[in-house]
Image 1 (cartoon, each protein chain N blue to C red):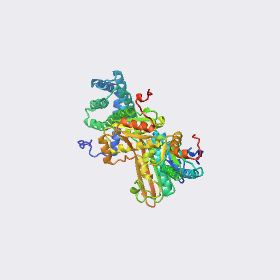
Image 2 (image 1 turned 60 degrees about the vertical axis):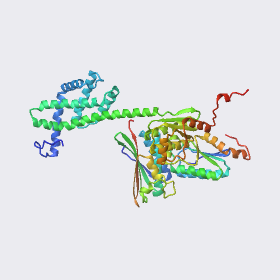
Image 3 (image 1 turned 90 degrees about the vertical axis):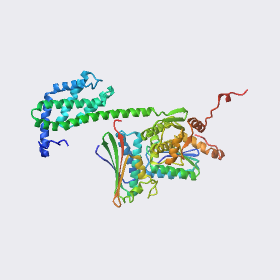
Image 4 (image 1 turned 30 degrees about the horizontal axis):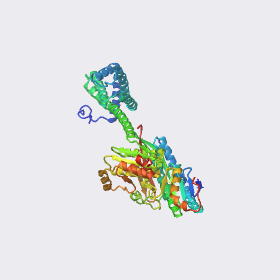
Amino acid sequence: MADDLLIPITADVDVVTARQRGRDLAAEAGFSSGDQTVIAAAISEIARNILMYAKRGEIALSLVANGDRQGVVVVARDQGPGIRDVPRAMQDGYSTSGGLGLGLPGARRLMDDFDVTSDAGKGTTVTMKKWRRMNA
Amino acid sequence: MATKGKEAQSPLPDPQAQTESTAALLRELVAHLRQNRTQLREEWARRITRAQLLTAMTEEEIFAEATSVYDNYVEALETGTFEALQAYARNLSERIIPRGVETHEVVGIVLLLRDVLARSLFGKYHEDFDKLNRILDAYEPAANRIANTVAVGFVQERERIIRQQQEAIRELSTPVLQVRERLLILPIIGVIDPQRARQLTEQLLRAIRTNRAKVVVIDITGVAAMDSNVANHLVQTVEASRLLGATVIVTGLSPEIAQTLVTIGVDLSEMATVGDLQGGIEEAERLLGYKVLPLEDLTPKA
Amino acid sequence: MEVPILKQGHYLIASIQSALTDADLSQLREALIERVGRFRARGVIVDVTALDVMDSFAVRTLRDIAHMARLRGAETVIVGIQPEVAFAMVQLGLTLKGVSTALDLEEGLAFLNVQTQVRIDRGPGRLDRG
């Protein structure tokens, strides 16, 4: 359970792989098909963000337990240019790439926990979690 | 805090030495409890019956459970690990909750056991007050932790069962009804929290797919209050239904809810609303191309 | 993976078979828009039943297809969005505003038949309505 599943993100086909792995992991952990879809969509958004802004990076998937809750943890890391203004990047409709600007704020809405750390010039790490109650 | 008033006997003991002596004392304690197992267990079962606890169980059952609890208790004291006890407490709770055993009874019997054992320690060491004190210092934290473990295990199991029942009630309380081919009605009654709202949406979307519904009437006459979270969820439900190709009509918005929605600025521009359920169904039938006529209009005029 | 595009009467039907990369989606958009002109299509159906997730890029591409096809004279309808996918989409804020949707292929065809009725009736020849 402690092993992270690492998916390098270097091309658009990796976005598909990452979200499929995320869905499989969520299914294994007993998440509903609705939650599996939500997790897959969130992974898709942040994996594409890596491609668009940093060109390359990786996504790590793992499971955690916390009391009677179980969680899927998604960590997206890159060594790209970083986000200069994190609060602004978290606003709906903000995009420097001509996209819908839904990447980060959209993923945040889908997940329960969401955290971004970014150093300009050094890269960005997004950590997000989705929880479910066990034995319920 | 636990050492307050005992400074006289042990001024600032070396923590390492203290842990060692605690371990030795616990070993002595466990040996004593093993030796007097039969007698203490019986005494405890008697006290349980006398205190009129576990009335839902027979005397034999009480004695059998008391034996298991006793052995698990001593083992937890001996090993200092609580996993086995925790598992046992969960298993016990699973068995006794359906029989109507209450939280106060479970807490009561564990406290009784603690008292029975403490008394036996008083009996054994009453001539050596200093030793008794040190034995109790070792015993009390472990005993309290055991009592805690069992009580918490029981309460968690109860909560789990309550959650399960809530789920079941939720499922029952949100029927999606098919009134005509391709027309669904979802009457929502009572309080909507985010979890129920979510469940409602998932149920409705599945029903749209399986019934091939084209129009859905969501009637919220029975909803007392709505905050912005729930209102936004309602909007999401309408949007998601449209993605499946179904039109949603919302009916029964009370004046209070209408006012709330406007005040908090929920965007309802995309939502079709009709005053009451009857009007909603008529509108739905119109969208589906139905026309309802009184029977006499159908009989051919002579 | 290339998405097969079938021509049926005056309609084009793109039936997505498996998960698509961004490049696949862009390629689908170009192929459809090119064919709307080539076959003088009146309607476009994109069947997304096989997609188990739709993110912002997929939704934007579908929206672009609908808008571009309209500029070239064809009405677009997206069919087969799964319940879970729809719910995740609206939570993401992706509502496909201004794009028509239908439950499945059959409903999509019925929808296009109604939408294009007037034009078909006025059109040069009769169509077989599959």
